[in-house]
Structure formats: structure tokens, C-alpha cells
Image (tube, rainbow, N blue to C red; front, side, top):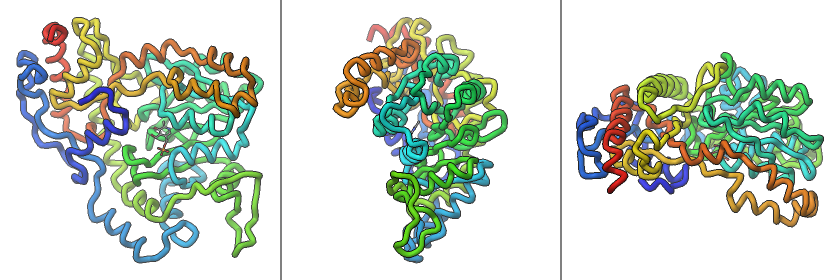
Length: 450
Ligand SMILES: Cc1ncc(COP(=O)(O)O)c(C=O)c1O
């Protein structure tokens, strides 16, 4: 596989093998992967010869759900019942007081920041190791995205460095539970409380993840989820915001509904706040989510079991370090299985060559995110007309200086990812992943030379 594929392209490639397969074991794979065999990239047999389970998983449950909405003629949340049913069920599943469905995860984050009235002159703390949406939602409000460096061991925002990044302008902390494992919520929530700054959890990858027995996304003022096609809960596109705060829930509802309240009748809408947009989920997506949710608990259990087993196997391989889970993580959603690759233990073999070799062994993998804070797109913010108007040339130069994240830079040279659907395979498949890595390690010297 081309290690230069971005995350979504990579997920599409790995899913293409078996889209629509019902959840089940992958076919029994060949056992030709003993560490002594030649690496597949050099013409040897693959360590993992079968296919990993495809994604999405669906059957007649989803077909019926969609057809029911089609036949009902009620295709938007104002007239139908599916979105409301989803909200009710997701609320129960997560233990949140309120759930608001949105058109995508980005819209859920936009709603949370909009409801907080975050705007020009404000700062929002974010990690650099995340999907670009976390940055975009801040920048779109003409607020400054302030990067706090990554904890190399866990891949999460370094909670110990957040306080030093807080200024009089900081209006929110937006930690991301990257890969589906929680950031250090004890420390993050404590800093938020101390400085009276709201914490909005970007839980877009963390469905059913837990922190000390509570579902992530329910610990900050709000938690935002994505149901985009690659996600563990999938309606193609879709999102949700959870909150326990009654007042905030009301503001969020109105914001996502063009500033209009629930009690509206006819065209005499009751507006609130000063801004809003249409960020509503459709009934088709609501119905899909209700159907997909019937599989979520079982799939999550399987991912957890396989990920734990894989971690046990990979911990025995020098130079392979699975992302650390904080002590408070009682369950990772394992949207991604992430580890660090240390080429020093692989005869100096470049990470991209390792990824290419592992992919050829029948184990699809990618290098994950690049250093977002150094990306030309993100750094271009310093030349954006609106930002220059609000913060001035010097303010934007300072912002570039503050965006230095050396640990994240290092992580982006070492990370390797597997996708969540691979964790729906069998224990035997996990063993073959480890076997493939051991094989590459054994032959690393040859691979460096070829
Ligand atoms: C961490 C993170 N935040 C936000 C988003 C945005 O979600 P969506 O694509 O549903 O808008 C994603 C989706 O990939 C994500 O992974």
C-alpha cells in the first residue's frame, strides 16, 4: 500500500476488500508467515494471506430502516421520528442527559463552539495530532487554534502542558480522544475548572470509549461524535453532541436549527442567540444509526479483545511500542490501533519501507497524520486577511512561534496505524500481524539493502 495515502483513502482501500460482509471472522489465513520465510515484498509468501473484515457491516436491518423512511415520506427531522429515536437511544447508551444529532462531527463541534459564542480574539486549545476538522472549526470562527504538544507515549494531547498555554483569551479546551482512547481527562477537566474554561471533548473517534467507567463525551461541557463512513458507528455522514447541561443543550439545538427553538409553530419561529446554521441530521441517517447501533456493543467488545491481545503480542517485539492507555481509560473504542515504530530495532529500515513491507505481508497499515501545525494549509492562517485584521502581523507571527510541537513532530515520524475493521478479525489474525512484523524485523537488514 502506498504509505502516502491519507487516512480516509487508506480506510477506503482496506474496506474495499469486503464491503457489506456481515460481522464474522476473516477467512482462516495462511500460516506461511514464519519469521524465517522470505518477506513478501522480496517475493516470499504473505504472513497474512486472507482478507480482513470489510467495512461497513450491514444486512436487511439497514435496508429495512432506509426503506421505512423512504415510504414514510418524512425525510427530515421536523416531520419524522428516526432522528429523535436515535438521540434517545444514544443518550441511553452513553448515559448523557442530552443528545443532539448533527449533520456530521464537524457540525457537532461547530455547534458547541457556536453555542459558546467563540469568535474573533478568542483562543481555543487543541492538539496537533488530530484530524484537520478539530483545527478548522476553531479557525472558521476567527478564533486562534492554540496547539499544545503531544504526549509521545499515548499519542494524546499532553495534559501537563495545557495550563502553560492558557491566556486571558482562552475560551475553550478541545481535547481529542485520538484513536478512540481518552486523553487524560482528570488533568484536563481540573485545568478547565481551575481557570473556568469549558472543555469540549472531540470524541469523534471514541464511540463507547470510557474514562473511569463513564462514557467519553459525557465528562466535559459537551462531547462531539462523528458517524462518517470510517467511524465505528457509521451513517455515511453524521454526528452528535452530548451534554448534561440543560441550558447549553437548548442553545445547541437552536444553533443547529438556524437559531430557531423547538417550540416553533408555523413560520412564527422563536429565535435565540444571534447566530445559527442548518446542521441537522436527516431521517435517513437517523434510521441508519439506529440500525447500526444494534451492532456497536458487540463490535466494540471484539475490537477491545483483539486490541488487548495484539498489544500483548506487540509488546514482545523490540522497537514496537503500542500507544499507551492512561490509567483512567477503562475502555478504548480502538477506532485506530496505533503504535510507534523505532527503526533502530529494525536495522535502520525507514518507516515508509516498513509500512510497504508490512502491507505486502497482507497487513494494511499507514503512517497516520502528518504534523498538522506545520502544514502549509495551517500555517497559511498567518496570512489570512480576517486573522490579520483581528490579531495583526505580530500576533500571527507570535501564533506561529507558539505552534512549535517537537514531540508531535517526532511522533509523526514514528507512528503506524491499523484501522478499526481489522480488529473485527480473529485472534489468529492478530497473531499473524505480529508474525508479519517479526518476519520484517528478522529480514530488516536485507530490506534496507534492496
Ligand atoms: C478527531 C476528529 N474530529 C473531527 C472529525 C470530523 O468529523 P466529520 O468527518 O464527521 O465531520 C473527525 C472525523 O474524521 C475526527 O476524526
